[in-house]
Length: 515
Image (cartoon, rainbow, N blue to C red):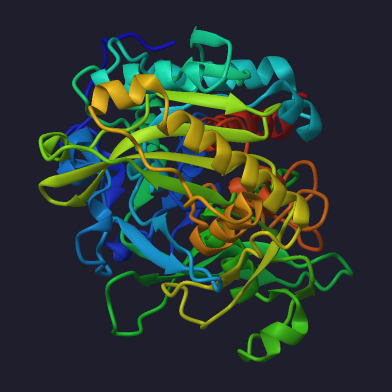
């Protein structure tokens, strides 16, 4: 567990292996190519670079020196400033009309999220078939560099702790990184000075001589080679375009050819639950009928690409606060409640509605929904968002869970702890009169929101195998939240970062002939 002592990495001292000039890497070869410098891609690239040459390709820029990313007092500002092609967050709207974002910067969504860090539950790790000891080591490796224990709860988080316990989210577990039922203080990627530490900081643990990070470059598709000997097509490299250029230039980068008797490396997609299935489809791996609409030459008819994508349905309740409290700076959650037999996650935070005004909200999500959706292409331009439909509440049980979640939010909002602190009575979540149950069901459908924990689209067992290798081809893996059937723990960040380290170690052992 990290202490308050840390080395702050800035643009100057992380730099020798970072470039935004695609000409510096075009035509070159590497042992591994990692696509996407987010929560998983950064620790994966750092780990593989200890023994092999690695190219990490990130469609966005550097997070360093950007106060919107680094300062907790700017938390959520990406939502209230214009969404430009150079913005650190790319907005998208699901077909249901729910607004969401995806990271577009080195560090990925770890650069724009609320910073709360919590491990997956033991049952998630068992279902994934992971090695428990290696999982523990990988979590600790991540935590040694980017995770901090809140040295002091803010006054509002102290109130949130009391309110959740008062609302029945018990027991109070104190500080823990484990996924336990009740109310707890979790870890944070904000340090004691309220400075964010993204997954990009983990690159410092790599070997600078073997690691190259290319910024502001978007991967168009994977290059495949047909060997002609009856074997599956093999990934040989990637095609790249400049993220902010309209000149149409396409550049290629390749995997190193192994020496006689040696083994190949891999192209690894770590572009997230939207990016990875999108790149597979743009590379000809997906439902052939869908790809033909975009004149994409089919390679492997993998009908499950884009299927099984899911977002946890959420609700956000805005509290009635004074004008003085509206001037408090944004701040993430330090306290989280895990309720209803791990089926509801609830927290409170201070979120911006303008550059100088904030609100306090209680937000919650259904932890393990049954409803699943589908991702499809919108365009052959990889810089454009794909189309995604999450099918919120398609399964009746999810709606039942949301009703329970709404009742819990109201109990928390109307506790003595919150009403005394705010000095005012909070309204009910729905007006009185009529069937409260039906009103709550209507509220859930009308006001469904997201906490940004979407996942799936390249599920283990349907698109990739247990080693995250894509079925039907050689030399291509997917390693990120798109492979998850459920969102782990209270939120996925910790486990996605852990997975990059975990699988990187496994790949090194595999290539060195060790298990």
